[in-house]
Length: 130
Image (cartoon, rainbow, N blue to C red; front, side):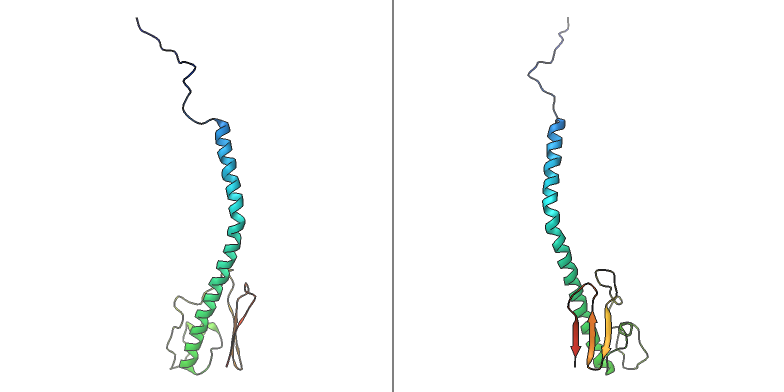
């Protein structure tokens, strides 16, 4: 005769209960909820840092253009495409003119004493007055 084994009351099935899974989900939700506000401020800081770095790079390209051509360009496009001068030694910006982290174009204006370069997302401007 074959013996039939019956599960004893001391054996439990392996796995997690619904309450245990819900508890883990709630804990993960709380941790994510605490981390998101901290990361939000870092994103803005990173965007501003990138915009400042772009402005410095464009400013360097503008100064190189001015050294070659004798004056600042009328538009940023002259840093990438030859405006017709024989002394043009560009392109001064590799990969084209960057857009700011907010998807806008950098605002450039040639002035009597130099140029003004700004981003719509930054509060401070970069003026280079000669």
